[in-house]
Length: 269
Figure: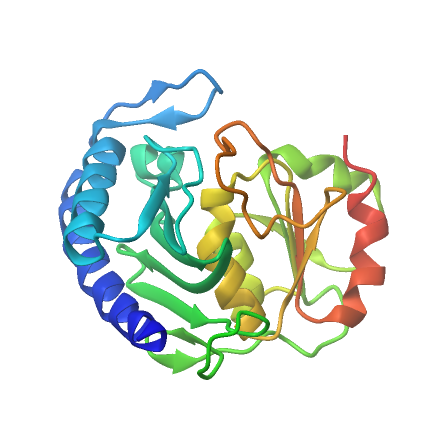
């Protein structure tokens, strides 16, 4: 029964994000944004997509909890819970920059076991299953448009990439072993590592909805999450408000590169 939920989650996420993505693509670059109290942006499109996703989950998985960027920030006391970012990359979305996506992570007992992220304009969809340590049976795997992806086994060089966020540019004070890129979308930045395009990525202030889906995909592809907090992000705790909890995170393509990049990002700030 539990394993069937994962199969159903994949089909559900694929269909739902495609439908929502078609509507959002028509609004792309045409909407105005407002500032939320934390300084991030929100549009009517974010709120519409949030409502559509919550409604669909309630219909398809009535026993599942939901935590989303735009409305519900308290993690529920549920065995299964979806963690949603209806538009990751709202600034890009409003400015006509095509890197933005719809992110859906499914957590089992507070830990992500499935993730799906759809980038409508790029026509790229990533998904993955990460069941290690969950007690669920099944195969791990990470995919882009249905094809297996793996993180890179390469050593750092000036022909390889490391991804930054806008708030982590103080890393430039260090001597970096790779070229850098800033894509402006947390999920895509981490998925560059999962797909082998980058050897590492740092995000200074992501929230749980930026991480939940890619947590499963990156690890299934062979990458490693390195929380820049005293404790791990997961499992999430019931009753905790995650709306204002920044979760600085380093992702690397393999464990051997933790010692390469960790000293560099520790100098942020």
